[in-house]
Length: 555
RNA sequence: GCGCCUGUAGCUCAACAGGAUAGAGCAACGGACUUCUAAUCCGUAGGUUCGGGGUUCGAGUCCCUGCAGGCGCGCCA
Image (cartoon, rainbow, N blue to C red; front, side, top):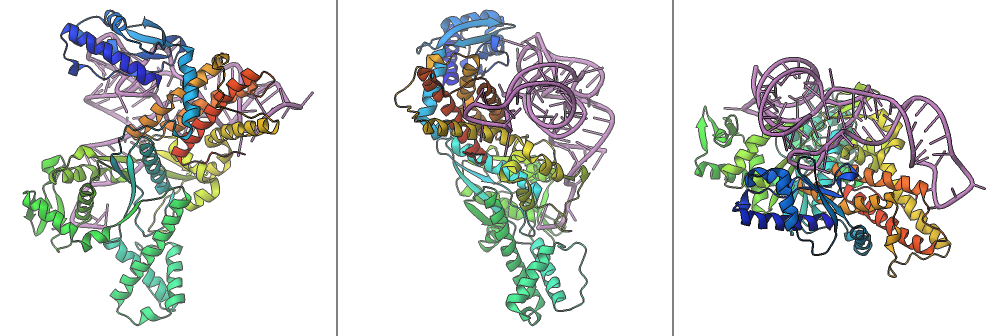
């Protein structure tokens, strides 16, 4: 692509210059090429001269001149270069370069935007991982959308991605789940029970109890209580997990691995992890408990891994889990967490370091919490109390695509107000339709053409010089950016860049569409414009694919 | 009290790891459908980027500080 080409040329020039002036090339930063906001500032611009001025000990503008004079242009794509302002180098590119973009897109079709930067490296993205003690709610939906799109963007960038869901199916909350079901079960037999406040209050617990009564009758009245609770927690968790799985699938998400916490205990992984830490000298005993010396690795204090009563902490199994991830040989491990877990970042990273792994290979994305509102009024959400708006409800009310878009059109670290009423009311205003509509429009256009006996034949080529309108050029420029937008999305783990890019592209298209006709008697022009709109169609389809949003052919 | 995140147009949010003149959508107002989909388009209006210092060629972005909101600070999970 053009931007990559210019960067290569610039780098070569800088290297040459550095050699001449005796500057260590290692000092030089990578060249940053950007598309200026203002068109008179060129098609591309770089601040390379300003950034490296101090290494060369020369004024930026003077350095810029020398960079330009040494810059190669083997493909003769550059039309003009100017030095502007404090030392920007602005590039103007020949129309031919933009026209080539259209040919590339039409030829590459669904592959346009994909790259092999990841070189097949294995990446694991773990997200949602909600406890199987209740249905997914809106907050989980945000993590789901963000995690999934990060995974999709990485795939498009050439990584070998594995999506994973960590099931907390061991420990105290499982016990509470089982007990909650048990109490509801007893109630179904007319027993008077005291249902504790901090047990799971949701109606789904009663549903599970009723199902057990229907299938097993009074079987559980005759067994040991602890056995009943244990079996009920297994059954309940399985039941709830099935629904979670279904919800996620309907939300467009397929996992490669459902990883059970319980399996860690079955393999004694947790004990082994603690032993390993101990062998490395990072575990000590104090007041009957065993502590991990995490403060030696940047955590604010040490953490308990084995309590004085002998029980392993949640943190201990989390360490074992992360050790397992690295043992599976991933080159990068990405955790998508709710921001309420941010306090755990330093201790997990400490654990990774203590176990001898490269902590930089663990990236933790904190997704800020969703603040749920109903008609402007805050709604408290609590799985325990059974007060929540489920992801399922949201999907039913506003649809999968609109819901995903709401989650994806903001940075992960922005706090999100989600007003269910507003989401319903304004679902037709959702920007997702703006984008989908553009795709449907183009599809419709090709249908009309076909109906009129016009076959959009791309093998014959077209005279793309006829695309001389400013808007046509602008569209070509935006289309050219797509691969780097996808790559940035993946590299910075920031899905929101994609929807904003799409909005840009689509608004120019709609405007263009309203002013100009594609199908017309002017055959050569029509052929050329077919290239343009087909390219838009391809990019929309590919981008929406990465967002996990449908690209409808009709609306 | 300490830590993390946030503060940008009336509202919801962007601003491509410091770039040139801070941009979109919604809401408001005024216009455009006998023509490839009006879920669209064109136009108007809307800003001391929370306050105060600093760093430099250049700050919404980085540092310090104050204020406001969210979250977290257990031998809970």
